[in-house]
Length: 458
Ligand code: BES
Ligand code: MN
Ligand code: ZN
Image 1 (cartoon, rainbow, N blue to C red):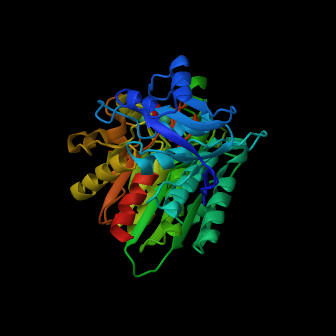
Image 2: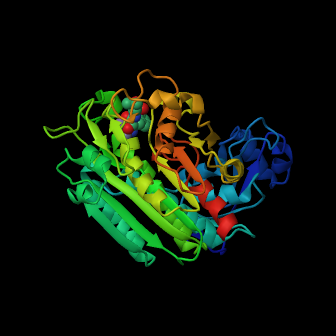
């Protein structure tokens, strides 16, 4: 069980209160506690909390304000604030928040702290799992999110292509998956020219991580994650403001590993394959250059319009490999464009697919798991923007319009045989803390896609 959860004993009840239930909640308290709540100015505002003492001054009850159920919008993760607010102890939900399952998950997600580089005081507020909540499922979901966050939060000096491969191997070994890598110049010999071109300027060799798990006769689900361990932009160097958080540019890989963790731990009936092109987009004399032209694994030639559009290049070769075995479902996740943030902001990644049934399912599970995703179109009229005058394709169309769409259209050129393809342009980062979502690396899209897969193949 996840360490944020505990078994009954003498747990302290947490009562969820809205503005409309405040009066009845206070009336149900012992008179002294009612007085104390009023004297403290507790109004049941969303996020407001109050600990109530018994006659001896011990904490006996907690009130926590949440949004009205019929509010225009309420955050199902609001209870994720509780681990940060409450003193050490064992707590239980005295009444149901709007969604007890998501509130429980948020409690675990809100207890996350990144403690690799200094001593941290772990949250000592633990929760008794409410009735009817699947402890194993919630714990696996929280563990996966913690894995993604830890990988993203670890700075690039300790999370290069080699270390990312180490994390993938540890996961593969844990579940008995078949693991292999293709490293450095072997990428050229084995026909991954674009992964090599992007990663070759780094002192830390580029590589393609590849593991498979599960019964070969089950439907093939292949996950591809952008593993750019640091993105300087290459010779088209980013300004320092844009480069600052580029340790998170392996967020697609981190989330693919989180998703793989959930799939394998739940033993979904799939033949899983995970592919991660792991590179560092660096600057050196042997760096790839603007207007260089490379072959790709698929055979089409690619002109480099911008060395900072490197994510789509490494994904192109990995997607082409994935596509060769005609998977039933091919999913790629990556922190691909700033344009996706301009369109939808950090918390609402766009997804792309031509499979309308799949899109409907993604929308259902994005909503039910509070893992927001928003469909954007693979808009055919923009496909010609990828034309190059001298090669088959250009990786960065001139102009700045529809940047997330043109990136998706670029990737689509490398997917031909997969029965169904889903691409998510994630951010992988929470810029300012929100309930259940501490500042820093974030699990995005993995939870929604996992629930979709578990409904299909559970
Ligand atoms: N990793 C970045 C995208 C990114 C930037 C994600 C900032 C989140 C925040 C990606 O490699 C990139 O640099 N994309 C370019 C593409 C452009 C050169 C066509 C971008 O979005 O500016
Ligand atoms: Mn870039
Ligand atoms: Zn990048």
